Image (cartoon, rainbow, N blue to C red; front, side):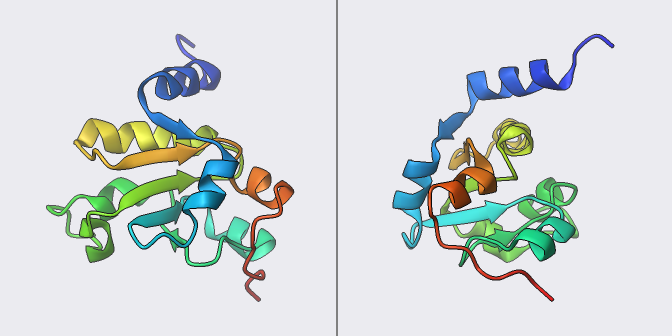
Length: 129
């Protein structure tokens, strides 16, 4: 293997805006911000989610964001700042870099992810049944 996950995440963190959980908490509820949960649906069902967040599974994110994609979701054309998060901050760093490489300028990721959010006492919407 030429490059491992740790190197890929470090490279992503070097070029994308990273916010911490406290900054994420401060942005929660801001109408100009969209919190995007890129975790797998099973993670949301098991652990809950940030209230008001938009779920975009990591495997579909680029397709949903790209207006030329047949899978495009209009919510991603809102112009809102996108704060991506996953469970801890690794997948969201990679996802933010991918969106940045696509030309999305208003994207950042939250280091610490959902785990850090819960530990900081952030609000959590109950698990799906």
